[in-house]
Image (cartoon, rainbow, N blue to C red; front, side, top):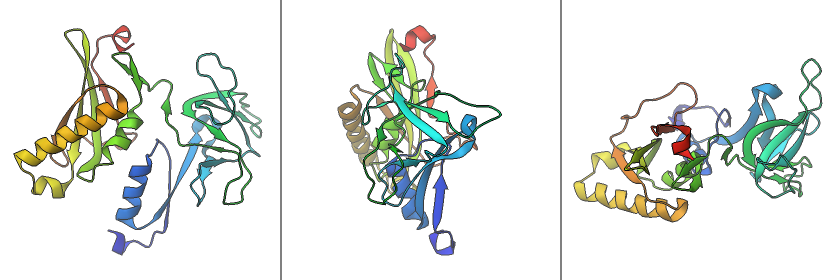
Length: 241
């Protein structure tokens, strides 16, 4: 499709996008992508956006005052530490927002950016405080899975993390589609080899064992809105903690 496009720049928001997914879209479409961050409560998109240097998202500080706080205590954290993004809207009059807690996890950076802009930046959204999954006492975010899977050129960016209980123990299985090229040339040996490699890398990166089901392209349902990445079948909230 890249040969038929006159598009040069794409501004993407709505849900977190890993560096790997950004790079894949850029390569396939032949465009440059700038990731945007915003919230409906703050007026929609435009709270912050990446510059050409990609050293973080520049916050429009003339409209939004940023902080990062500890998600548990609410205490402010120093620049560079990961915490929950908090914004105070400086220009909203009809519905002012003071220290609005976004539930998004990132870090602040006020060091000079190579692009020359002086606004503070926040890093890529690492997850949400309410998206965090606890499996066998280990905390992880679905965004970690995306970064892991897209490191494999044989895999497509379509996956679902399925959680259940087996003999009172948390079990995780990930359904992920392979690319059409890999599927066309597949064999039982190549599928098993790829599955074993992914399992090893996942345990090394995230800290616990999980199963991977490699699926034919277009096997998983597509969503018109935000993608549903997690299917948690554990019976109660207590099971998930």
